[in-house]
Amino acid sequence: MMPMKLGQFHGGLRLPGCKADSMLSPVTAAPIPPRLYVPLKQHIGAAAEPVIRIGDHVLKGQLLADSDSHVTAPVHAPTSGTVVEIVEHTVPHPSGMTAPCIVIETDGKDEWRPNLSAHSQYHLLSPNELRQIIRDAGIVGLGGAGFPAFLKLNPGQDKLVETLILNGAECEPYITCDAMLMQERARDILDGLHIMRHAVQARHCIIGIEDHNSAAIAAMQAALSKEEQKHISIIAIPTRYPTGGEKQLIKVLTNKEVPSHKLPIDIGVVCHNVGTAFAVADAVLRGIPLISRYVTITGGAIKTPQNLITQFGTPMAFLLDHCGLQRDKLSRLLMGGPMMGLQISDLQTPVIKTSNCLLALGPGEAGDTHPEMPCIRCGECARVCPAQLLPQQLYWWSRARDFDKVQDYNLFDCIECGCCAWVCPSHIPLVQYYRFAKTEIWQQERDKRKSDHARDRHEFRQLRMERKKREDEERKRKKKELLQRANAGKDETKKSAIDEALARVQAKKAQQQTESRNTDNLTPAQQKQIEAADARRANQTPADTTGDEGSEA
Ligand code: SF4
Ligand code: SF4
Image (cartoon, rainbow, N blue to C red; front, side):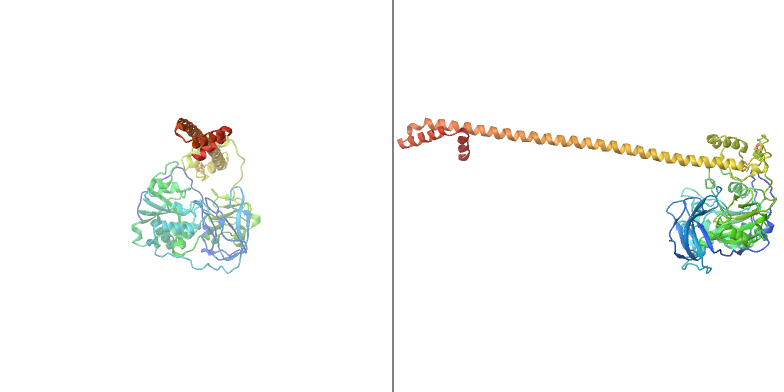
């Protein structure tokens, strides 16, 4: 391990670990339930859309759903079986809401789809090709957030990655899935780290592990070769909650602060969970998509706490019963740890990509419920806040529904670690107020986006109509002009025809006069003919005369 001067983040807490019970036995595979409920959305971003139909027989690892959206992750079949339904089913969510799930009746054969494409020569692939493989494998951040991993592995063309950090600091009490993964699959995690390093072209890598987790540190060090030690450091960091928070871990390992409203990449750092690195190795080196994960099943209501490799879509009740859930002792079920975990009220809720722990708290473990009291302005909350916020102010403005003010106090820098609520002597559920404010602000932004979109559409329509009106007017004007020009041409032609006719008449008359003056030279017979012709002309109408003249002409 390289000696290194560590940084320190503000605040934080020393919490009881409660981890030993679930680390007593090696990790095994959970049994496959008769039915899996695989949610179409198990990540941050757009839900995937089914690419299979009800009645289809699917094989393990087969693509079930995907989306064209940029921020999304495909979903694959966790085992072989038949798709029997696509239904609304309870999913892990603070509201206990339902969402579309693909229901697979499993066949017990656990039969893989053929032709998994492995890329052992991954270093011959470009970063873009690697990101595509990771995207297609449906890999999301397994530390809890569930952000699609391929996006976080794309720093952008103008950004250089100085440090790639693997987060092995499992700082919440009870959770041990990452610790067990590091103990058992250290080589795979390092392989995943190399692939990620190639994808972001990082200069060096650090793996941060809490110092109480000596077995995991030892396993990772043992797996690290001399050559790898040149660019990978494994650092034991002080056990202090919430060291596993991204910004807090970066501060400890690099002594760099990620500024408010900025991302780690803005200071040249990319941070991923050790479980994500393991999933990347599986996807790239073995062609295995993300269909299962290590899950800690623990708490006072569980007889045999342990870690199990669990297929996504497994109903929590099935898993808890497998570990000896004592329903009469269950006071609260959380997905995650006691500080940031999500309360689960329906035991049929399925395990998803972000389910790191099922914590079935027994009597006395869930904490006494005290009535909420008024804030006494003791300032304890600000003392422990790792994000250096003013939790009391956030509480006031969230409660007053002043969502501009609460943002002025950097609400969105709050990582919902719960330190403030933990120490609050007035037992104010502070994090609930912050979550409420965030949800309201997101809703207002969604509404605003919708109304902006509607206004843009209206304005565009108005512009289109005005343009059409102008074009119609222009067309009419041009048509009128053409008509006028055409009429003017006709008048001209008519006038010249009349003038020509008149000229012909006058010319004829002049000729007749000339002829009459020459009658003296005629013979008597000619004289008579002329007189007869004159007499005939005299008896004809002017029109007949003109006609004769015309035909003669
Ligand atoms: S810890 Fe509780 S009582 Fe004390 S200032 Fe913060 S919110 Fe108020
Ligand atoms: S929950 Fe938010 S406000 Fe409270 S201590 Fe954690 S980061 Fe600070």
